[in-house]
Amino acid sequence: MTKIIKDLKKEDYVKIGDAIQKGELVIFPTETVYGIGADATNEKAVDSIFLAKGRANDNPLIVHISNFDMMKDLTEKPNKMEQLLIDAFMPGPFTLILKKKKKIPDNVSAGLDTVGIRMPDNEIARNIIEYAKTPIAAPSANLSSRPSGTKIEDIKEEFDGKVSYIVDGGETKIGIESTVCKVIDGIPTILRPGKITPEDIKEVVGIVKLDEHIYKKADGKVESPGMKYKHYAPSCDTIMIYSENDTVFLEEMKKHLKEHTVIIGSKEHESYFPNNTYLSYGSKNHFDEISHNIFTLLRKADGLKPDLILIEGVKKEGLGIAIMNRLIRSCSYHYIEK
Ligand code: AMP
Ligand code: MG
Image (cartoon, rainbow, N blue to C red; front, side, top):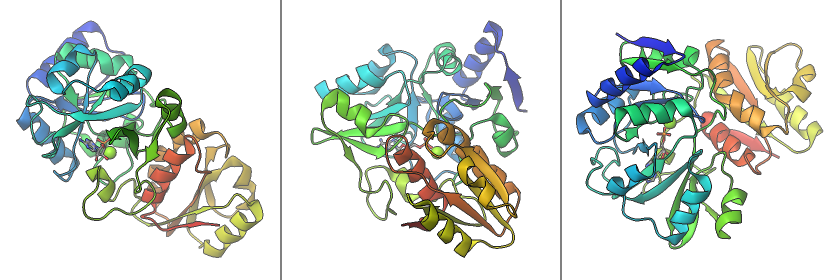
């Protein structure tokens, strides 16, 4: 039986900590998206995460910690650049890939010799890890390939009966998953863009690179196995369109419009589509607002069962890089940029 709880008191944290200790699954909020977590040192418990999500077992999980002491048992000592990144971005929406120690079972890292470490900047998440007295492996709380969960109303049915607790912490602040970064040959390389932008990283260590698969379909061997899989995708045809030029953008949208098309786009363009269901993600230059809203709108659009979903893209800069990475994948690389 799954219990949904909110406004957690000490006794609730104790119960949740015990559940994690016993190898059970718990869904909890972080500042990015909801996670489905288990004891990262318990191989069997970790297996049940893969099972609950239907996740491919070559797609590694991120390990969440609540204090830096926890890291010592899990990874080799970070080098100088890695330490600078840790000091700058943890706690926060930032995952660093480090050489792993044996304490991390192979299924967490999908057989790689590295592991992603993150310290969430969310009190509920950190308390749960503290009370569990163990690092928690937690991918995003969504069935594999679906948009990540940013509020429990979106995900409770997907996981009812599969987890012991769902902790309701309201809508997650950021709305898209952490920036995943790995220092490769002395260069911090972004494997998955997020709220911590290339500029943020460059400011700290003077250098940064974006992995070549941020906007491109990945086949074969990739640095981050998650890049290979279908993700964030509604079940109907979905196309993303972007142009800096409003006239070009509107023309292209009208070209694709069908009768039962749902549009996800900026509030500035809403009035151009009076005959369609229009889900506004907010103002077109407010990337924080867009990232906060985007996954729940993708789910909402899907739920309306249209023939087609058209999505307005954003400029690929700052947090817009992460938003476009998710949108490009949600339309399975079917996008038009002019
Ligand atoms: P999720 O758990 O759904 O937030 O996805 C985690 C992402 O981090 C996936 O894209 C993984 O491929 C990536 N990831 C996790 N661990 C590693 C690792 N050791 N090396 C490279 N990428 C990783
Ligand atoms: Mg995910």
